[in-house]
Length: 418
Image (cartoon, rainbow, N blue to C red; front, side, top):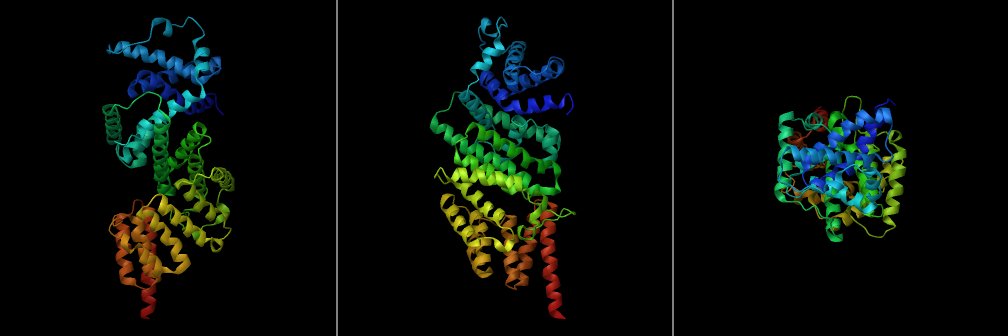
């Protein structure tokens, strides 16, 4: 590891707590972010020679706070400042600050920061962009590249998100138990959105695929804040189980390999074992939730040594439970896959028939429908469904997968005419 590599890791790990504390202090996202950047610059100058401070987080908060106060003064903002004795370096203020960084403050600062990024007034794309910029510290060019938009467009998206949050008047006081629970659900959903952006990109878009790893890092951070929350354990378990199949999901040409066709020896057993332990721990709390059910479904796939060993009956039951916990056309669509394995394509097609309206713009609906129609030897209808899926594909890999299905369909029709 180079001399500066350990500093980069330390700054990345400290970012959520430091930025959260500065945000609570200044109540302005731009000032807090600028103060953190100034503290990082000073760390890069001081730490290589002097070594890391006793508490890097306390050091960064203290230096960032003083830098932010200077910024406020320079801007001549009409904002009240602390008493001079509070900010004067007449004592070992760093140690004093470290002592006051107790567990509750740490949790609430980071939770507040995460909650601001997933404010319900923001569209999902702005939530993801803001979280990646503020909490993860990714640069605007990195985020823009992953979203396949220009840097100026992404800069505007993040600026609009910040303005919307400021206009919403997000409270900075310590949240109560009920509000904290509501925030946790929103934060979990935002982290899973980030994960799905990376998972969908897979091996076809390296920048976006990195979002999956970042979501897992945020999931670990959330679990450190709420170590006894079963749904937080399950969220991390779910992401780890899905990510364990990363090396097997695409071939050398970047084409999608379906779950049942994957080389399971390529699955990351270390991630699977960690996820299964987390899931078992979550289930022992006897407080079932959507992430626990989804993780349980992924666990059944991970435990099957071969595709033929998959317990589709149990998966179908779990999807029925998920339909009760979080009714959704997408949940029913996923259940149809299990039903097709248990009772055949005809019953699965009947299950998804009512979903055509709500899921008409959903790639996976038309892809699954086309596959079921193909199994039932209804080629003309299958072609229509596949064509619709290609039009809705979000990545070249998705489109290529459906085109392969079409090729198989056409080859079968050609063979039938000979």
